Length: 451
Image 1 (cartoon, rainbow, N blue to C red):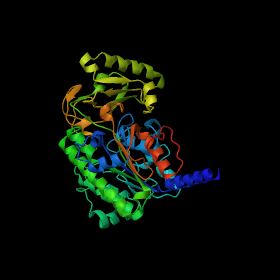
Image 2 (tube, rainbow, N blue to C red):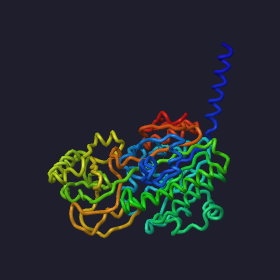
Image 3 (tube, helix red, strand yellow):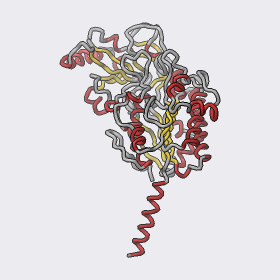
Image 4 (cartoon, one colour):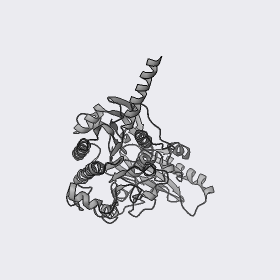
């Protein structure tokens, strides 16, 4: 009996000390990442494929609705769907160029604040939604509204603490400017990787989040599987290799877990639909979000008018010819509630892959307000107009919208495999690995990842 008790105590001590070894978590987000980029050996991703084999991976991860960058990253930070995080789109409704760059936009508790409250060091490198947030080393993603390709000048302006940007330039990247910190060039992500590697080696944060943007940019421009997308993925894979090397050089490999995720998948597109042209006489408007569009009543209407607005819009859409009506599905308010989508929308449309929405009511000069925004204006007339490139924002359950998940390192099962993750499940995973309590309204700890 005493021997059995002794063995049990030994196992308990071993398990506890093993858990205590997880002192660092690095979260890497590849914008526009889809699972075949690591499941299919034809993609140029040796680092991702090695991490997949030696860690735990998912067949796919589900985004939020709409499957968009800022709502998805907010979900990772909070474990909350858009209805509770306060970030339903990339940009505020009626935006004139500004995005949800600032941490103050998030309405739900975040993993960042939870870690700060416990005195733990954090870092964010080109991460969405965190500018001016409670992060020890904060180089959050932001750009100038008038020059959306420039990621250098505004990031330098908002960097926390003062001087960290210049320290990185001197020791890791060289001079950073609007050319090498520009989402038209792979150097943006390569430099982000160098930033992250330097921060991890010199500051050793308990939690660091790193975001890569250029895969998404190439997919918007050329479609889901274009050659340039493969080149962008290869650049990201190489940057991940730099981060993995920094972990080794720091002597922290045995105490660091690495999580590689995406925010949404992608669909190659061939046409744009303008639903607002079909409801000109209804006091409501559709806000387009790529492969989805959300209906809002005008400010001067009453809540009691909502039922009539929904009927009028639904009737108008259902009168379309069969070949046009089959291009989208109407999502009711009840289903939107189930999906955790913006609570102010009356209904939504989600398109079939290949078709995206525009909020325009006619031809207009194309305007660049950041990645994927040129589609909202076009010089052509018509409800349906041709388009090229790619987009996201569809129902996250559509296969094209599936994104990726790989976890590796301290505390992670080796050779593990799960079917499905959700972006809202990332925050609970980080909290568990770092040994803190962080209750989330929508996220849960998925079994099969942690030892």
